Length: 228
Image (cartoon, rainbow, N blue to C red; front, side, top):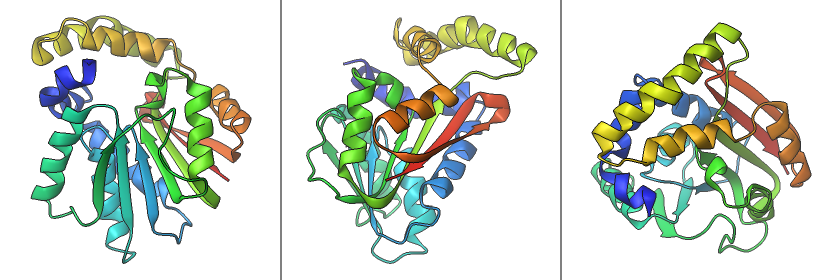
């Protein structure tokens, strides 16, 4: 599995290739995820090595006693490394990991107050089905937050971004990850995915309400929020 192969260098590459801006993106995403939410159960889909779950625990765990995050992912190796980070930070009572598919979430309807996903939706084999599953397991009045790559609206910024994604990032990713295909795939997956208003339309189609988006850093990445 691709993400098992690159798991050991995944965090390093995220920070290196984003010039460490990804840390700020996740902090902003965590704040957006729990805005106006009083309930204490959160599901982080495509949890990976747990960076967003950790930010959620730091942001909300200190404000709300009993706040709990379940992270789900297909990659055992990513979650194994995430578990090590969580234990080192003393957050194991707040964050738990389980293996599973975003397309068949192993939870009853209306289980979670918050559902989040950082840089995972574009990897779903069936985007519509994955979004419907997230809507299904969310409680009425719950909140969805998706953090995903997008393209800048400014033409010069879009040109520079495309140059970086098409040439520099795959080359650097290949050297650091020692995987020939991983970061070529990243470039393709972003180019072929939707963003902005098109993504909001997918959220509404999946049954969410009040879908909104907020571009960050010239539109390189975008926070999407919606409710049920």
